[in-house]
Length: 111
Image (cartoon, rainbow, N blue to C red):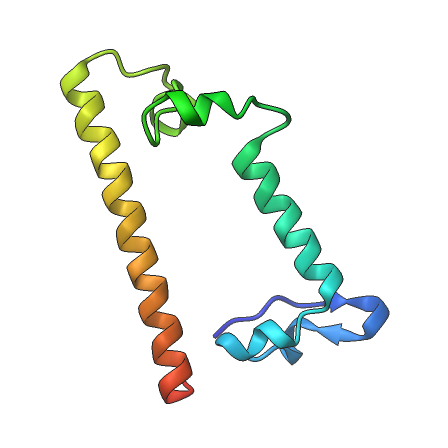
């Protein structure tokens, strides 16, 4: 595996090359690093102040911005339904894949 050069945490003298691969890396990242990761994930998920109502009222995966948020909303109802279904299916596949990878790492100790 390739690793980034430099320090993960200069104050604790932890380099990227010191971090093992797999789930054992979780315990090696400092708590402040996990806080930064979770805050960034929350910013990506919730944005800079959207209302929670949009998640209660809209269809799952429909943010009204179209593909990659760059091409405007999808107006064709058939294409929109197919795109939303693909989005949900791909999300489920990704969750199954990461679960399998974590189980493999936990059982065999390798990636």
